[in-house]
Each structure stands twice: as structure tokens, then as C-alpha cells.
Length: 569
Image 1: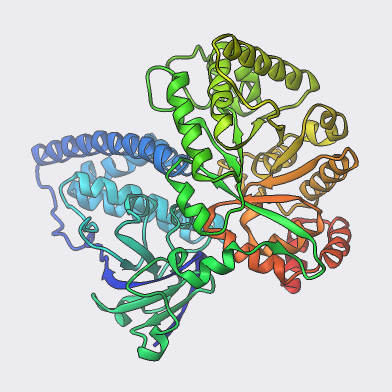
Image 2 (image 1 turned 90 degrees about the horizontal axis):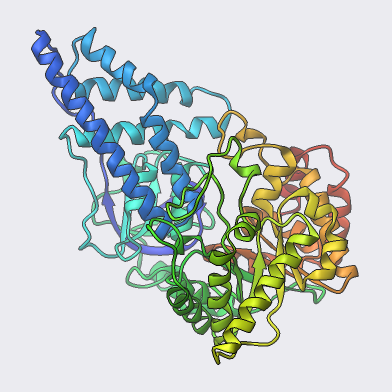
């Protein structure tokens, strides 16, 4: 049987179905008849709130370590919602005034709020309904109504559910959960974001899913095209990955992914990966990564009482370089700001931390911290193809100061008898309009640029992407953002410097003709997107892409840009 849904996380995988059915509404509803009973339920509720907050704090830490900082923000938002006095008041009113027990009150209150979101026209806000339900689910579990989880002993499991919350998805292990299928949810949901980050193929929007799929059914997921093969026959199985192996382990897929991304008219683009931690290196290579376009180092500094030492950092950087086997690895130095508190740094509370002391600004203020990282990187440089990148640069002076500290670190190592690579390419992130406009000047001090589309979009459009009130305005396809990218590439190439791009735009196959036409030398993305992006690029023409970009830059808005790209695909 063939089922059709919406592709929300790429990849192909085969496994056995495990139906995850929530029983949150299958409890006995109790009316409270006395003030004593109400006080008991209010006390239980308070305890559940405290327990849920502790769980979320732990989940945030775990997500930062194992998935990424951006994904952790999903659960930071959950923690804020849980701390919202209006939510607590709404639940307490149902206990005190309506006489409903705590589980009933939580379920009803959170579902009412979720329905308000679900009724909105904008897809982004509709998707937030599941976040509210996630909070309700957590509170109900803390009240003693445990909800079904996935056994760690299972392998090659395909999760089948009506809807999954971000918390559930983040709890899945890639060792046990091979894929996800749901009746509800879309590509912009936080559940989809987490699934993509974990590299778990997923399809949503499958009608009557729970009526069609039984526990133990043999299921093949095509997360690239939103297709489900239910109990495929012998002939179908011959062309599918065997025994539940993930698509990235399938030899045919690996062979295609390892081929270069060269357009029909011979223009080559390097397709690299973004790494959050060392463990992703094997996955990235299997997916065909030609290098690392962005290795984030923030995870080393988070969730600890003292900064990481030189030796600790050196060992991690060395292992990543060795794992990539002489492929280029661009390491971004510490990129953290006032929105993330590090207990071992003096950080004043800032009214607007995203426009405050972050990225290279923070590093230049805390020179000892910065120099320790630079020394570790210099030591590791002998073990592979290291490229160094400074974040959040806005001025020429910041680059010069950072390079001066780098040379001081090198000299101190030489005095200690430690040799380092002599010529380490130095680059900067282009993520603020000032840097984009000054690209021709900044190019004189660096070897390469990497355009960070997430922050460049945020700063160009003056939109906080994490603020739900304005997040609908956040769109990397906006012509203003595209014009900045075009200007940066042009300025860099005129100075003989190469340009890469990282951010969500880089992994969107819809953007492939645009990325090719912009003339980028490299694009970087999550490992799971690499095979599809390479395949898309091979079908394109560079010259046709250049002409397409000229048309797109004249359009009035992101909506029109997307419409043209959809017609082109």
C-alpha cells in the first residue's frame, strides 16, 4: 500500500511500525466537592509545575549538547510559557472555581489555548498549537498520568502517531528510532525542526494513519518525497534499504552523494556540512560532505562552571580534523552573547543582547578566554585542513585585533616549543548589513567569507526570528537579503576571495537554482540535506541560474521569489 504525506525531514529508511498513542484524555474526570480537595489539587499542580520546569531545564541542557543551540531555544520558549502566570491562573481557576481535578484542568486549559492557535490563518502560529499541547502533556505526566515512551531496547523503529511534540522527538535516539510518520504537523513545526536536526526521516499529514498502520507493520519512509510504502512486497523490497538501515548507510545512496556537485555546464560548487559536535562527523561524511562549512564551538562553553581549558579544546578540534581526513574544516570561534549566561564570565544583563556584546565583540573583551581557544586551534591545525572564522564582525579593526591575538597565541606556543601550521586561512562571518556593505574593504584582511543567512536575514529585516509576534516576517528569500548576498559574492570575487554560505537557506533544495546563480563557491548545511542538494545542483545550469538571479533581485518580496523558484523546480 502506498500512502502520501508531507515531507518534513529528508532521508529514506525502512523499519517496523510502533504506534505511539497518547492516553492523556483517557482518565477519570473528578469533580472536587470540598475546599480541602481543591487545596490538595492545587498543591499537586504546584509540584507538577516545579517538576516540569526542572525537566525542561535538563532537556535544554541535553539539547544544547547533543542537537544544537537553536533547537534548544524551542524548549527555552516552553519554559517561558510554563512560567507565564496566565497559564497557571487559567488552570488554577478550573480547579478553584469549576471544581475540576488537576489533570482535567491542565488538559482542558492547554487544549483551549492550543485550539486558539490552531484556528489562526498563519501556518507558523497554527504550528505553535503543538507546543502548547507539549507543555500540557508534560504537566499531566508530572501529575502521575504517565504517557507512553519508546523503549531503548527497540531498533529500527518507525514511530507512528497522530501528532508528536518537540519534547518527544528530542527524546528519540537515532540508535532506536529510524523514522517518524504522523497524521498532523507540517514542515515549519518545531517537531520537524528537531527531526531534521537529529537526521531522522519524517513524513507528516498522512490521512487515517492510525487506522491503516498496525504495530509491527513493515514500513518504508521516503522523507524526500513524502511517500510511505506500507508492507512492501518482495519486488519492492529489492530496491529498498534492507533490515531497517538508514538511507545514509545504503551503498547506492552513498555513492551518489560522494560525487561532486557540478552543474550541467561544468560549474562546481563545494557542498559542506554544519557540525554541532564531533559525533556528527561520520554521518556527514557518509552523506557526502566535502568538508565542514561551519563547526560551532559554543557547546564547549555551555553548561559548566568554568571555561574549557586549552587541552580539552585541542583534543576535540584534533579529533574533528582527523575524522574529516584532510577535508577543509571551518571552525567558528566562540559565538555567544548576552542572551546566554556563562557563570564564569562577567556578563551584564542587556536590554537587547542580539545587538550587544556577542560574537567577536565578546571575545575581544575577554582576551584570555579567546586566546585559549586560539591556542587550542593552532595546536590542532597540524592534524588537518583547518580554516578559522570569526563571527559577528562589523569593522576592519575587529579583524585586525583578532588576527593580532592569533599571532600572539602562535608566538606563545612557539616559545613553548609547539609547532603549528604556518598558513591557516582566516575568514569572517558576514551576518550583519554593515559587513555586507563593506565586503570589498573587509576582503582585504581575510581569505574568505561565509555568509550566515539566519542572522543576516534577522538583522536585515529587523525581525527577531524567535519572537512569534513578528516571526512571520522572517524570510531569507526576501530580495533585500538576496541583494546583500549577491553584493558580498561579487565584492569577494573581485578581490580573488572565495565565499561560502551557511544557514537554513543553504539546505533548502528549493533555493538550489538561486544558490548556483549567486555564484557561491561553497554551501553548507545539515548532513541530511547534502544528497538531495547535490542531486539538485547536478540538474541545473550555472548560466541559467545567473539569469534567474537577475530576475529574482527585481521582485518586490519573498512570496514572489518563492513562486518563481517553485515554477523553476
